[in-house]
Length: 104
Image (cartoon, rainbow, N blue to C red; front, side, top):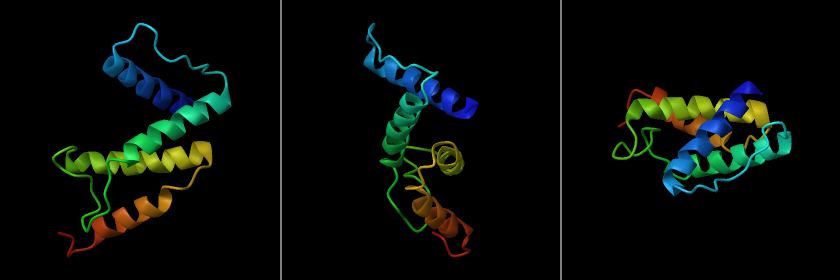
C-alpha cells in the first residue's frame, strides 16, 4: 500500500507542476478507492505513450530505453496492489520481444 500511496503522490505532484494551479486535485490518501482510481488514471496515461513494437520499448525519442524496464516493473507493482491486470499482456509481450536475440 505504501508503494501505491507514493506512486499517487508522485503522479499528483507532477500533474500539479504541469497545471501550475493553486487549486490542485484533492486526494484522500486514507481512502483506498480514491487511491486506486488515481493509480488507474496515472497508469492509463503512462501506457498511452507505448506503441507495441518488435523491441518492446517505448519510443526512444520520448523515453530512454532503460526507462521502459522501469515502466514494466511499475506495471507489475500496479497489478499487484490494485488487482487490475489489463496491462500485463502488453507488458509480457514487450518483455518477450526484449528477450529475443533478433529484436531490432
